[in-house]
Length: 517
Image (tube, rainbow, N blue to C red; front, side, top):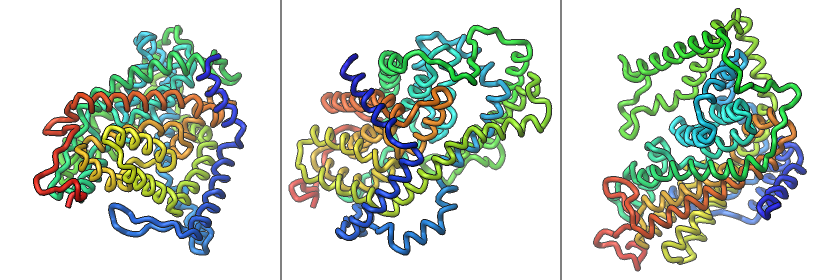
């Protein structure tokens, strides 16, 4: 057994010895409450670099916060962002799955994809799904498991490879999406502390992320096929699991159902295009200069639900698996029944994240980390490396990419500009650190969902198993992204069009020795 496997096995054993994930989050709530009391009595505070306001630790056991916890408990739970998205999509997807659409469609799909291309296809789809914001977590990850099971491979490997593509590859894509507009808006505010007329270029990282997409696709494929899947071993389906036969020919009823589902999908696409480009342009916002298609992106979850619903109903009606409206409602209800564990997990996780945010401990940690980095006085290459590692660490505690960047960007962007590193480059370095550790932190809102999906195939698969399985992807993506950034730095390659360079020359009148004054 290799040293790497020994380490992963130790991580898995330690993680699986922990209590149930629901219990873990309840324990963490207690830990955060105690930590907030200690931090409050210690007078922990910091100045927010963007707003200039003083941020202080909040005592979660104060009367005000206890009252807030109890009064807002229903709202805290129902406003948990992933919950609504997951349940809405799973109603439609559940009908499609239980009607037989996924089984028939994926058997046909697997036959058309050579085995060697199965993993990279899923990873690429995961990376590109970032354009649909979080929809990839809900739709593609469970499909990854179904596809691998249909191909006779370990379904957990299919899910984790897709998870790595969706989440750890969040800052790679062939096109520019909403994340660029969000992060570069913060970058612009940060850069203007030093150079008031600096304007953002939303394509400022595009050349790099364009190249990073096929690179990560290859890296995740290699890690999955050579490390993760062999380590998972041979999959033995649970007794109640219906193993799809990838060699089985489709029946006439299944073929008829797939044809009807295809027509239903075309109808949904046609309606969507009409809503985008037709009279009224319901899914466009002409007042949004950065992205007029923001309403369409925000409606992705509802559109995916409608697509699954339409295809599932059409397939079931044509194939004979849905004979009445009662059948359809029953399939949806059974799908929701499968989500019971996730709903309980979401309740515990929603309150932990809410209390952690109320305590301000995450914000104080991020501000302190950015301040520490600013005091190290390192040369630019080493500073970028430490920045990537710091962001990867902070990402374990603050999942939101924009929230972390709003806290440390105002410190790091001007500091790197003074050392000749462009705001585009500092934004890119931030993104490389942020993406790599999404898949190994229990604070990742979709991690419990992936765990629930994995337990469909391996009931004893615990939180330790999931983190140990995702760790090789995380390390490989962090190392690859950092190495690529180093190559870009060494060669001075452009990061994007319209003057987005790695290096930056201060305008005349800015004195680096005087902090820009």
